[in-house]
Image (tube, rainbow, N blue to C red; front, top):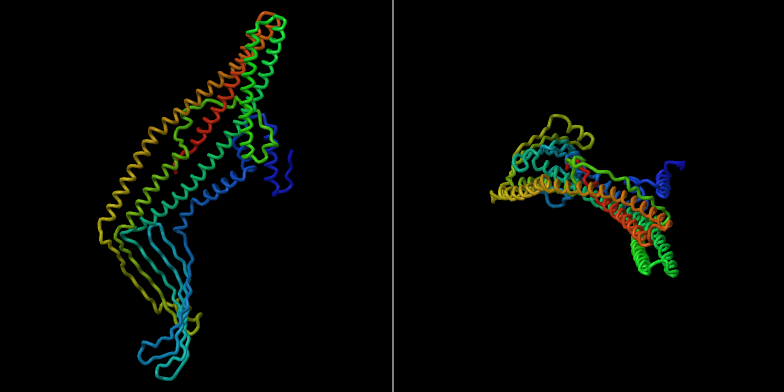
Length: 479
């Protein structure tokens, strides 16, 4: 048992435990186990995982469009130009202004600002006909400002479309990252199981080669004593050379696979691959995929909705603008900032303003033409998506399920055939020892057994690839 003495060592202990189980595993390694090993040993895959988690957490960023914001402004000015007021002069007039407040856009379009403004005015060597003077005064002004669009983006239509578009863009980014993550994971898993199966293929062919080599040696020895026909010796030598060639090809492929797997798993050389479990596959029903779509299908659907939202934004931007605007503020003035601010909260000097602001495009039909184009594009995309969802995707899913189930059946038959071929070989060897069979017959049965094993390994790899395609259909909804 592995003990983790501290929280900081938890990840190390988990990784070590996984490596130990990986080294000694004789069961079908689960996707979760393999994924943990892959993340722990592959920096590229780890970076993809971090990027995916970051983008997933960024999906709700669009909500910040309607969040309260703190804003502020600070400025300083100095004026030494001659006064434009008759009978009043000064050497210089300086002012320092500040504004601090909160602002927010509501989903129904109302823009609200709550702020406090301050203005300090200093006059140096001022003269109004009664002698020079210096002065400093403060003005405080709490205010509320409102703006509500009535036509273009009226009552928040544009804002809500922008929010939805931004949210969909973030979801699309996260989904693209998930697609890349899944693709890399499936590639790594395919490489892993290919290596496992190739190792077992090589081991099986080595055993077959040793048995055929013994048959060849016996046939050659008996031929020298004129107890075996030369044709059987040639047949045995041909089978031996063919098996040697197949083994060398398999070993070359194995070296390539193990080199590639070593690039994916940094500590692969220290690991022992698990024994492949040929009984882990079971048939599935088309109902198991009912309502499920692939990541790419989901991405296409999100893209269609995004185009619809963006077309709404474009249409609202091209419409005539009519906004209601209003503000309410109170003023306070004093030589002290604190007193001026206090005076401003007394309801004795309010300022109220209401009005309308508009903008009318000279080309009055631009909005309708833009909307017509966007609607046509959206309609075409909707028709294509409907075709994909109702016809192409279900048909491809049915074909995939059918191909997978047939391959599972074939694998089961191939495993039975392997047992039968092994029984045939053992039985024929016994008959040969009793002088009731021929070397040629035993040789043919050995080759039949070798071909049955090769077919089993090939089918298992095909089913691995098919099961990975099925695993991509894991989303129950597009949103």
